[in-house]
Length: 283
Image 1 (cartoon, one colour):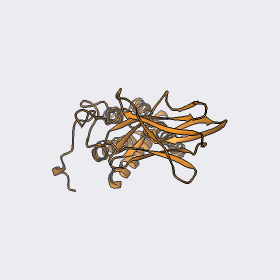
Image 2 (tube, helix red, strand yellow):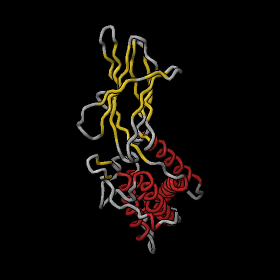
Image 3 (cartoon, rainbow, N blue to C red):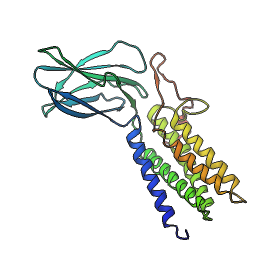
Image 4 (cartoon, rainbow, N blue to C red):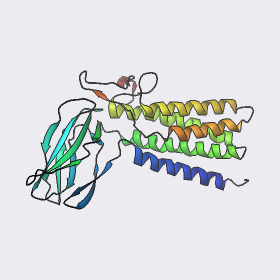
């Protein structure tokens, strides 16, 4: 193909697909839950991310007068006894209960039971698979927005480079180099800043932790670093194709999976290791 339109079209299509996939599969995305009360099918969304310093509202549709709703929650991952908490009406057709706030990286798991006080029938909502929620500190927009934009620009350039390499279009090496640059800035400058503000840790991947988000960024960066290096003097399109495929594979891993987690005994974040020293920062 002489025109670059189709290269970009394919790359944009793949990148948008990756954005949607990340959005709907990530463990911080609200969980869709379906249940049935008196033959009425109901669906709602349960939050899986909360802000430290603010109690998190768990709400469902109002229930018949002969029912009572109970929220069960405990620290995650622990085998503590479940804490029971009642619901109250919001006066607008829903009932709610509040999960107490936790420090950054603290987690709960929770589920709901609806009990019929006339026949003691119990409706279990997510009891078999309790919903896990993680709390975080607020992240300034100047760090979060560039991180998100730049990481997907890197993904876009990666797909462009890979597509061009398949058809041996000569500019594939150039877009591979751009991928590496944007990946470096997004993943290793703004990424650690976002982590630090949210959880007090700058890097939670190898060799100091097991955060899959950081580790997949590192893997993608290494893949493209190899491709860019060996494409300097002699064009090796197969390396760019491999790096682009690797980028797609690692970014298929849901965002924030196995991320920073608070140790309730020590009060420290256990998956991270390199805290940024504020005295080094110009703010």
